[in-house]
Length: 530
Image (tube, rainbow, N blue to C red; front, side, top):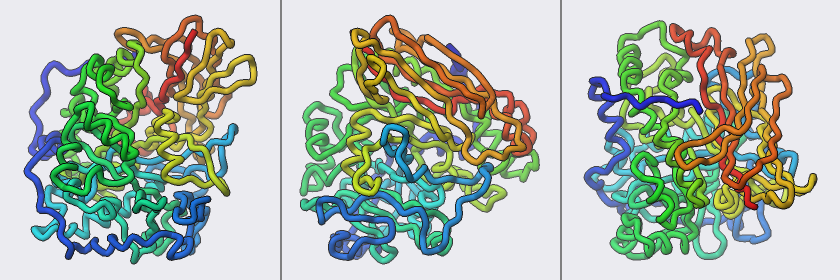
């Protein structure tokens, strides 16, 4: 098992790094939103049934609800790039995968103007009006990263005092459409037509609301109470009663910052899951590299990597996350695991060569994402319920797209030759369970680029850490797959690692990164039983 040692003592760092380390913690509450807020127009609970289907939104069986599925083009005439390179985002394939599931990518754990510590700690005015520059930076980043969804996790200090429609970042004037199944708005189908005159992306992201406080409930269908104080109390608690109240309102109840929990706590709490990766924790392991990066940006160092790869030198794995994940599943608990972007835009105001802040929403959003395997509805569409169902089932893998957009990753189990069990599912030894994983390719990779080296791994959750049961390596593009017949029950996950040799010419003075060993994909497990 590859491991990255946690440094015994963190080096000195500039204040900007210290601010980042505090970014995910609590702080003084912000002013409450009032009815005169610039986003108060969102309180017009207009449904797609009232406005007619907007571009990329179709009507589901419930005429009061729209789906979150975009069209392949926009009025701006979007044309997908012929080749991928750092800084280019690609939409997920519009058609279902080989077994009929949609692969849709997005953010789980992101902070908007409705978090008190976002946007340089000034997300709203004293009257509760959102900072428009910050609001638009989030919107542009989400659209340009071509995410299909974002599950917001705004902090309790501001979230509990924000009306639910405002928490969905709804802007009817730009063409957003609320999803409403009859009991009030539950999600916001965002229009990206105002980004680069509509040509930036064909994707219409689906925004759902959530909170990071006592726990991290995502996908709420509405506030847990009409009373602000009562709902603040629920959001701020990790009690069994609070978790039950959150689940009753449709939430998938996770916790963030796995480094703060023991496996025993994650087993005993009635949670749905926790994070397998978090940006904040990653920086704790690499404070020295982060400090060097900031200094080089401030000096205009020409040896920096391409701006889209600025964070590549600080990507690593944290044994505290991997070991706790393994120990929790080895104890018999079944938990969903997610990758937390944890973006706030409140730490690194320095501008990089692309004109964006180091910590711009767009840069953070492009780094990695969560891929959900969703049961499609009519016309290969999906809505908030289908997305929530996929997450609840654990049909999720995480991918670091700054290394390239994966196409064709597949992990499943087979029983008796033809029965398929997907990621997050259960397979039986008695039924002849075998595990199968196929390596992806890098979508639209320049055919003249050096091919990255890929390694597939199958791992079983052990009482201390993950135990490798099979592995294989090959250059990207060559056939690469694994099949394994487990001989004992347990939680098994797949992993794809990469030596990113295709990034030659993009890493500046950091040429040693080309031969590195980076995680490209983490999957959720398949549970093998007797």
